[in-house]
Structures are given as structure tokens and as C-alpha cells.
Amino acid sequence: MRTPPAPRGQTGQDGSEAGPRSLLTLGTIAALAVTGTGLAVVTLLVLIGFVAAPHAGFGLPAVLRTAAMLWLVGHHVGFTFRGAGRIGLLPLGLVVLPGVLLWRAGRWVTRVGGVRRLRHVGLAALGLAIPYAIATGALGLASRSALASASLLQAVAWGFLLAVAAGGLGAARALAPWGTLVRLLPQRPRAVVVAVAGGLAALAAMGALVAGISLAVHLHEAGTLERSLAPGVVGTVLLLLLQFGYLPNAIVWAIAFTLGPGFAFGSATVVAPTGSALGELPALPLLAALPPGVHSALPGGLEPVVLAVPYLAGGLGGLLLVRAAPALGLDVAPMLGLVCGAVSGCMLGLLAAVSGGPLGDGRLAAVGPSPWQVGVVSALELGISMAVAAGALNYLALRRTGALPRQPGPAKPDPTDPGGGAHVIYLDSRSAEEAPAQGKPPGPAALP
Image (cartoon, rainbow, N blue to C red; front, top):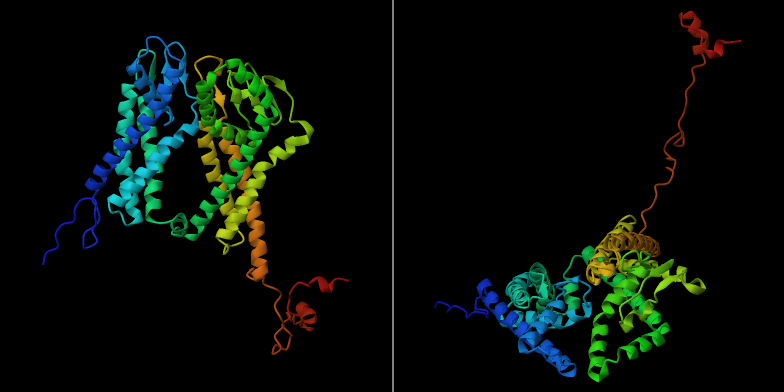
């Protein structure tokens, strides 16, 4: 009896799975649902802001256009304003809303599409990312006005990348827990992933601690600045949401600070452990942690403590590397530590690039850490510390288990050898007397 074909998005009796066309259809539905839900949430916030602070001449089209712009800002899409220049310093915290929605969409596409194998997760992610990128590009065109215009290339590119990353992770998580997915990797790549994740997590925690301490020290200045703005009740809530959105940026900048290169907030400015030089800052209470002017190094000998943070994070990464892959050679463990440092440097350089950006074409055209400086310095600091820690801990583990390779010792004498294993030199006592008789020139022994 012939097996009837399976419906789209389901598995048949022969184990066949949903095809690419079915996943693309489901991905299109999920992409439209994510875009509609996100726009609805952002539009509600914009309406609250317009009601709290009404502006003459702004109607429903302006509200919808502003909501579309904010939704694109959540995808890290920059805007160019007429007379002001490009705005690229965007809050990374806004990525959470589209990221969570795309995560849920990836899980839904996997379940409804009947995906059962890990290698088909990529097809599900692409089926979601392609229509989602088209939707973000269409919003970029629709949000343009005479005052502001979004970057169409960034709208399409960041929409696609975010959908692939968040949707793909959600699709993979729908198949199995994280522990099972990590155990599917080979031993050494799994160890690298664990070490990099642990080192970056420790560095992020210390960066958050440094940023929190700096803000707590200048909390009085932040409160004074907020009261001078007089935003009102609703304005205060929206201002807090905006500052929460910039908290990930602040953590990345604090990481760059602990690494050594620091960051800039305007042309010819720097904030580093060795000192800082800043001009006037925008009226944002969160920036009260960066007092303007020229300041010396950290007080109380805190500079060595701050600069030691990356090495401590690298040491933790080396420990996790050895624990995840205990059977390593003496030379393999340090090499994997250097690889982990290089991967961490690339990721931190990317985070530094997306955490900063211009605020117009004037003095604040350069804001944030330098991506290449953060990438190179973090790769060296984390790589060296991970290599040293992994090499030392792996050596101790091999020595404790008795798995160290033995060095070849001196050869023992053979008891059956009459010479005892030593080299024997045979001398001919007649050679010195017979040499002149044979017409040979006398040797050194014939000299007086």
C-alpha cells in the first residue's frame, strides 16, 4: 500500500521532514508576526510619550513613522538627520525585544515545521531570516521622511543577522537542552566554546561591577541632572527605559576600560585607567559617571587592580578549558588557550564596534571604544593568560594522574656484554715500533 504524502510542516510515516518551501512559508508567517507584535509594543510606548508631551502638528502618521524608527533602532539601524548628521550611538538593550520575539519564532517554526535533525536548523533559521530581512528593509523605506532617513543596507543586514542568530538559537533549543547540544560538539571545539563563554562572562560581570561602582560614586550628580531636566512622571519612566537600553553599552565600555585602551566620548577625548580627558557631555543622567574635564589615574592604587581583571578572566577561561577537555598534551593546552584568546578578541572587537557610534557630524562624531584596539589588546591579554593557566593546570593534572611522558634515561649496561656496555678501545702495542719499518711517517708518540 502506498504511503500518502505528509502535509506541509509535518513528518510523514517514512520519517520525511518538512521541505524548504514549507519552512519558508512558516518563516514568512513568523516574521510578519514578530514585526507586527514589535511594532504594536513600540507604537504603544510612542503614543504614551506623545500624550504626556503633546507636540503640535504631529498626527497618527508621525506616530507610526516614529514607532517604525524605534523598531529599527532596536535592530541597530542608524539614521541620518537633516542638518545634524548621522546618529549611530544606539542602545543595545533595545535588541532584547526583537531578539526574544525571534527566539520564540524560531522555536515555533521548528515545532510546526517538523524539524527533527540539527542540520536542518539552519534551513529553519534561513526560512525565518529571509522574509524578516525583507520586512525590516520595507520598514526602513516606509520610515523615511524629510527630516530623517534610515540606512537601508543596515536595515536589511542587521535584520537578517539578528533573525539568523536569535531564530537559529531558538530553533536549536527547541530540539534539545543546551547541555545536550554542547555535548554534540567534538571535545576540543567544545572546550574552546566553554572557555570563551566563561571568560567573556567573567569579563562582563566585572565590567558591570566597574560601571555600577562608577555610577554609584556619582549618583548625586546623576540625580541633580535628572531633576534639572524636569521630565515629569511619564517622562521619567521613558528616560529610565532609555538609560536601561544603554546599560549594555556602558558594560562594553567598562570592559574596554579594564582592558586598557578605554573609550572616547568625542573628538580628542579619552577615558582610560591611566587618566581621562573629556569635554561637555549630553544631559543624560547615566553619563554622570563620566565627569567632564581632565582627571588623573584611578585613586588609591586601583589602576593595577582594574588592569588585572582581564588576566583573572583569562585564568578562569583556562581553568574551564582544562576541565572541559582534560586529556590534552603539554603543548596542546597552551595552543588552545591562544585560540580561545583570539576568538574572544574577535567577539569583543565586534561588541566594541556596535556599542559606539557617532552623535552627529560635530564634536561627538567619535563616541565609544576603538574596535581594533579592543580586539587586539583583548586577544593578547586573554590569550596569554588562558594559555598560561591552561598549560599549568594541564601539567598538574597530567602529573597527578601519572600520564606525563617519560624522558629517556641513560642506557643500563647489558650483563651479557663482557665490556659492561662500555666502549672498549683496543690498542696495538706494536704499531709504534712497526710504523718506521713500514715506511710510514712517525706519529705523535714518536716525538721526543
